[in-house]
Length: 99
Image (tube, rainbow, N blue to C red; front, top):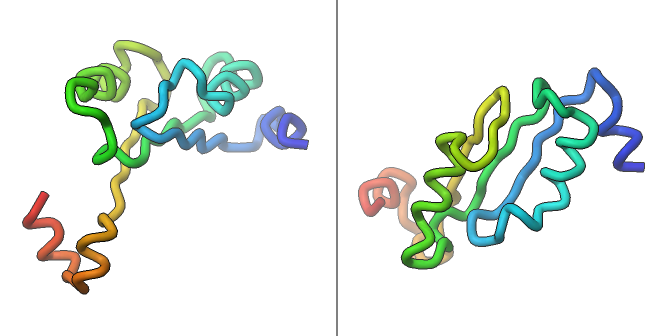
């Protein structure tokens, strides 16, 4: 069923992977490259950058810069607010200052 949707040339593939998981093992990236070899309709998004192990940050940066894997639309990254700031009812502005 997933392959049917991904194979549709009108479909945009939003390939979401966690930053703390080895991208080599990402099934969604493998499937996206299979059905979209030119990567013209695949948008890879890296989430949870705050969970990357100390010392592994460079690997994520290399991925974002397209040095490890190339995508026509480039890699994107997003980070949500952590549970501590949510529990403390911190405003978005206060949370951003702590970044």
